[in-house]
Image 1 (cartoon, rainbow, N blue to C red):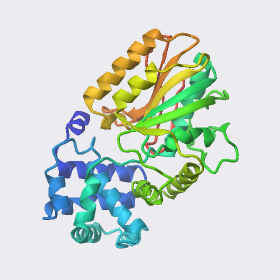
Image 2: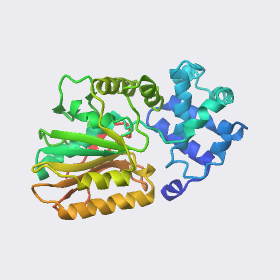
Image 3: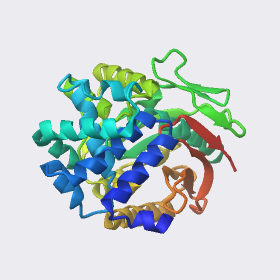
Length: 353
């Protein structure tokens, strides 16, 4: 079944899978909105036609979540409030939801069509729990100081994680009084209680979102499943951070940016870290191969004084678990599985090594 999902071209099957996945993640209202897209693809709107004729992998391209973001945006902007009672759980009958969504697409076809142009952009702050735990683990291998470089930064939420506060299985890290408090449900032993020092963070994205612009903040919120209210609160905190000091995110191809960052001078005693979360699937295969080759080459040149590490929270395409892996050099770069996590950071199952 996993292989079938990786190659899924059947739009209806992809919509059903995405709806089931959302429901299992605790977003039953969003699951109904996603499932209602079955009615949309049967219709004659431009949006429905484009979805029905989708040329790529429905799940890897997150096609149903693209339209879900556009529909949520109509509510957030007070353009159309038809989904308010669906998101609140007042309407749970699927046929009613189908009718509401289908009518909305008919009314707002031209506005919704561009939402299919690119994948959802959230770079959810809750995922930083896994990244911070990974850094705490790396502390014991390479030292306490880190230069962080993020792929697929979107709005740069997690390039501001040095301003977050963390409670990771009872281990505290970051800024105690921060308005961004990350406290996932924790399974397994706590991570090592090592005081990480983040020297700098940069990121890249093909279409970065500028959170200092109100309309961009609304776009980011549109991709958040509305019944998960704590995620909305984290977006608001991130917007506040960005208005105080904009995150350092450049518009650039991932492969070219990694090559550029690896070629730049590295401070002695600081580990250079490439990290990313739930973004690898959106990067073309040839670019992924470029990045892997660049990291292997840089790893071969890494020294104890200037180490290199690669932290990834990505989807295992065989099991669809979201796994935290780490590789580091000059210790050979062997991949180690540190744990698994909820896709939006609600929980972390920490294995450690």
